[in-house]
Length: 452
Ligand code: IFM
Image 1 (tube, protein in one colour):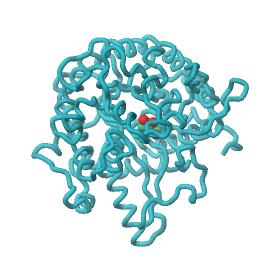
Image 2: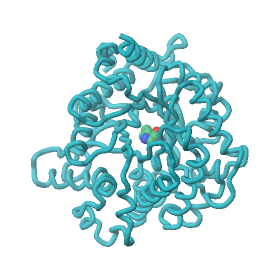
Image 3: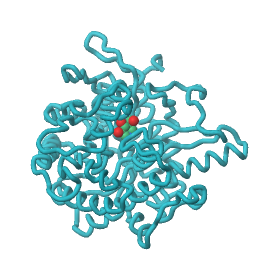
Image 4: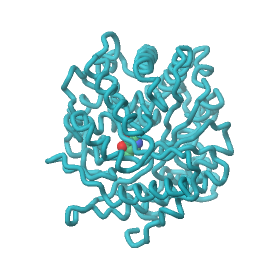
């Protein structure tokens, strides 16, 4: 992978329309730090990180990239890349420490400054309300497993939209409900660390329901920006054509993809998965499915890799013949085109954005530079796959690289680096990597093709 020549940014740029959205993405807990400042409450991740063994390097988000204090310099970095969009999230416990009741003005002020700082730099703000950091006080009342959290989220969405909505390009309710439900409540490897499939299924339902009810409420108030949700999706492929492998792949596709896209875009859960869940099927109240299917202005898709299943489970990605990232994920750009085209074929799609794509690799600093050719190749080849999907008619409107900065990679701690900008955590020095230079050149080529 390191040996391949970098994809020519000029040739690639010609494959996209001039009004395409190009961005970089981050999330609050992964970069902000200042976890105990200016009135911020604990989130479930603050508490989860205190559990021995929960995080690979026993770290937490207390300081992270110190973005809360360095946001202006970080936005300058974003500006120098030449992107026209920045995707970030609001830490709910920073703006409403208990998840209900009083608002924290100092927390709200931070996001006001951030949004205004983006606009001053000509960068469109794309805000996510929930990138996993639920206020711990709500967890103590039952968290996402409790239906009341749905209503707390709708209140939170309304407050943020009233304060910031007119300055945003888009507002996303949830980032990756599958991960929050399944990794947080079934396997328990993410906060809040619960291991109960029935709970996970109900959490997923409440996340979707809160999404739909929030969209309704925001529309009733006349919010001006685009409204949507971000899903982590992947092509799920059978290891062979055997009945058993095909059946397993179909079920896993049901759990990861159809469980979320069907209710959002068709108003119902896939019956094969409902049947497989048996007693763990979600408790759905009258009107829930109609609310979940509230029309989307956009669907965000986070894509990193495919998964291949045989009858026994997921096949070791290392056996598939392609390079792996530092997360052990197979590098498979074709999967992004396959996924987007399948969604286009099977569903009535709204505008689609690739809201995350990127890779962790073990970077080396050489003469104060980070020649991360594997990451550059990864990003360029996925942008190329996005161009293939666009050419096939997918209503793709944007692409955002994960991530602007190296950051707190959840249960993996700080060892896994996804940034196109390197962060030295001892000094907080930022060093744009070769991938950042490639992206900047690509975006310059985009602008040159506009001028031509
Ligand atoms: O870092 C995460 C992000 O928070 C959500 N999507 C996947 C990324 C890489 O694991």
